[in-house]
Length: 107
Image 1 (tube, rainbow, N blue to C red):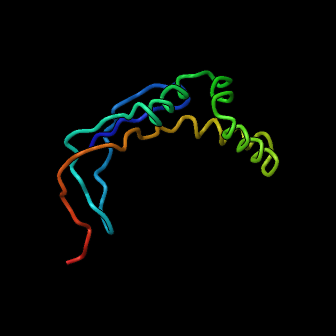
Image 2: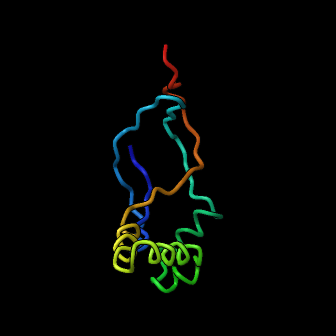
Image 3: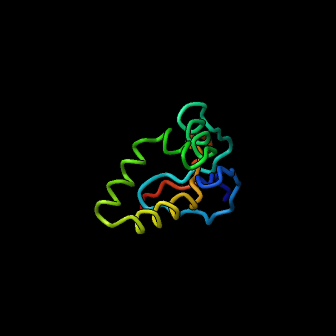
């Protein structure tokens, strides 16, 4: 299946092919239409396209998390984890319409 994802390090948006998920307690929906909202998701896309300083100014809550990590695990570990987290593609999109393919309820 395909997902829209963004790399927070570079701000790059990309369409990724990922394995189909399995369902245990929920619905599996084959998406027919999807969108990126102009609210939360647009704001996250804009933040991801900023420089590292721009990201820090836009998201002081992230800065606080890094400071807390420095206090507990040290500067180098906080830096390593922060860099790694920024380089992981983050799925974008939660508004969709489609067809229910699996109820996820045992027979």
